[in-house]
Image 1 (cartoon, rainbow, N blue to C red):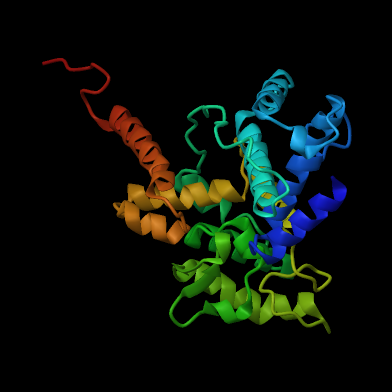
Image 2 (image 1 turned 90 degrees about the horizontal axis):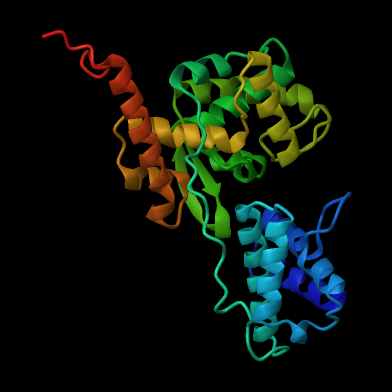
Amino acid sequence: MQEVLNRYIDYMKAGRNASPYTVRTYYNALVGNNIRGTQKGFFPFLMMKKINSLEKVDKQTLRDYIMWLMDQKVAKTSITCKLSAIRSFYGYLQKEGMIQENPLEKISSPKQDKKLPSYLTHDEMNKYLTIPDTSTPEGQRDRAILELLYASGLRVSELVHLKLSQIDLSTHEIRVIGKGSKERLVLMGKPAAEALITYLGQARPKLLGNKKTDAVFVSRYGKCLIERRIQKIVKQYAKKMGMTKRVHPHTIRHTFATHLLDGGADLRVVQELLGHASLTTTQIYTHVSKTQAKKVYLAAHPFAKGNNND
């Protein structure tokens, strides 16, 4: 299995041009990544069931795996991700002629619970952006990161792979290489552009020292920041602010989309800026916007609370 898996990973990197995040996620879904406790990966499950050949996996095996994951209290989103990885893996096996049929062809993922994405209000976002200490190089960098995430709606993976050549400060435009290596143009407003100019002109040279890289955001050791570090930066400033809600880079992306729609932006424009392949993915933000509109109405309209004395 390991030899076949290694060839599949090479295929994902070279043949599919998958992002490092996708490769890592699919690999972990297949082999498991828990340091402690029961491994939830597909291969450990096959070993537990004493299935020692990939050809012996059938629809019932996969149904048993789904039920087992549910019994283990694995989130439906994680189960869907694991099934996507297995479907892709078996698609590769079928393409290479190692199996005749893909056992996942008629296996559907568990129905997802509809959850509205979490986001920050305008007041929360304005306060949040002022938390970094811009008297230090790290603070100037962090301010630029937060401003850019909010101004552009970038994914954290897109942010860490951002190169200097992709940014045009004169037009406030950024060429982004998103999922599936698709290129799109995103915009940034004046605050983000100013924060980026300050960072690039003052902080980045100090953080780089004698090292050279074309990565936009670097650590104090002059190396490109990794996704985990960006996630930590985003969380630590929310904690400093005393925010009770969980904040991560995707929260800021949700906030970007929600505030655009609240401001009257067209849904297809938001879809383009977010880099969504399907408009259906973007439509969840219309529900958030409607929820916000209802809250504003209930709080502001004189008759909304049933206090009509006429």
